[in-house]
Image 1: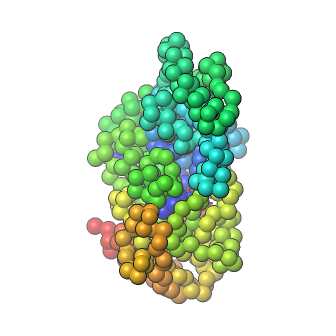
Image 2 (image 1 turned 30 degrees about the horizontal axis):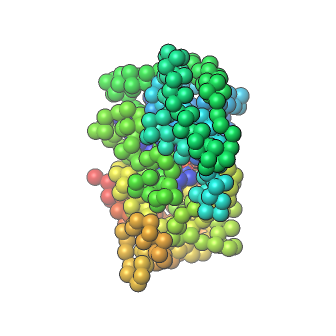
Image 3 (image 1 turned 180 degrees about the vertical axis):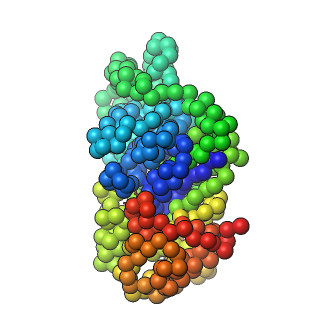
Amino acid sequence: MVKAVVGANWGDEGKGKITDMMATEADMVIRFQGGANAGHTIVNDYGKFALHTLPSGVFNQDVVNIIGNGVALNIPIFIKELKSVVEQGVPAPTIYVSDRAQMVMSYHIAFDAYEEERLAGKSFGSTKSGIAPFYSDKYAKIGIQVGELFSDEARLRERVENILVRKNVVLEHLYHKPALTVDEVMKELREYRDMIAPYVKDTAVLIGDALKEDKVILLEGQLGTLKDPDHGIYPMVTSSHTLAAFGAIGAGIPPYEIKEIVTVCKAYSSAVGAGAFVSEIFGEEADELRRRGGDGGEYGATTGRPRRMGWFDCVASKYGCKMQGATDVAFTVLDVLGYLDEIPVCVGYDVDGEVTTDFPMTSTLEKAKPVLQTLPGWKCDIRGIKNYEDLPENCRKYIEFVEEQIGYPITMVSNGPGREDIIYRKSPLKK
Ligand code: GDP
């Protein structure tokens, strides 16, 4: 049984917490896309962790964790994160890296910084983790797979020579930086080989066996629908697919095996980086929500940057769930809204005087104005509540209103950052 945990919005929806919780009943957790550019924050019995690269199953001794072939693997960060988790008292997890995963090289990180520098004020707000240069190289067929580190060195050297011809033209003529040498890149690759050797496997075999044995496999996504390069707010997107459908490719699983798509949707909006954000709020209203948001404020897990804030966006979230193919919606961080007398919700987009509930492409999205509807707040702390019926009436009404607007079943409500802060709910939309 394969389940995917993915985001409906711009990322930071609380996928890490939901995956960590679901991992307690899983046999395998697989990261299938993205790199160390985004982070999950997880709070459990071992403490509080910001994971950038490790699958969220690392806290469960019975789980086999896999970095899938679709991931942008930064080997030094992988090793550092693994070490730091163990130093914080977590027993050494079982973790493997697909031999087909490709490596983020230090030149990818440098190119990311040079490009942001070139774009100056018009930058994308990249985290400078090398992700866009990495995926560009992958699809230009000049990336390097982890497994290549363990094959013929002459073959690898020849590939590096060829890669550097292209890299050096751009370095010298576009960015006016020193050229790379084959020897320095080969040295970096040898270092990576020694660091990653214990973890590399043909994970297709492991995954194939797990499927045959009907194990519970979780596919763990990064960011959310609106950052998908095809279906998101292009070009202000990430460079790998954030949709559950890509889980089949990024992990190496037949698409028909994905039976559950748990789509994580936050009870208000937040976004990082540039791009259209229709329900965005500003000033003191935004500052207060940012300060109270998440677990200790809405600041980037990787960069510490303050996140942009907004009211819940039914248009974006309906679309987010639709493109994921949500079978279940996990509605998170609802406890944060307990301070508000009234809660505005974006129920439509006004584009040139016409109201739509269909999420448009970026050029139209940039013109959209939010159509807001205000719901009454519940004015109390809902943390610790375990049963849906025990939530204040206005809180239930908020959830039910959102469910009706987005048209996908909210079967989980998260009312705190911990594993146990979850309320299961029977949804009328769940067949
Ligand atoms: P992810 O990338 O989707 O995993 O999201 P992040 O980890 O960046 O952001 C989610 C933040 O909200 C983290 O700090 C979580 O600990 C926290 N969080 C998750 N669920 C809840 C919740 O229901 N309530 C509160 N207050 N915080 C939550």
